[in-house]
Length: 111
Image (tube, rainbow, N blue to C red; front, side, top):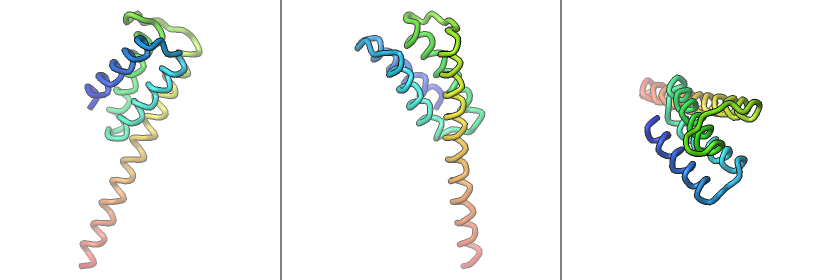
């Protein structure tokens, strides 16, 4: 799934560059893709996906041609948002899965 996230982020970065979208629009799209992908991942894997998403956003959305650089508070905020949203999405999905399992176990034990 991290590979799919990487491919989706690269496609988004290509769209941002092609259509000359603003950094804000590019960053929001990056956050949406990373959060959606993290929903299907475990917490450790979602952190890897968040890191990959940050590198793609930093290298292709903010600085073009894959040039990585640290741009202070913009990068720190983007990285923090990616990590927090990814962990939240993975945690919520994990809790929902656990709750569904518990309810199935309860129903099975009643029968």
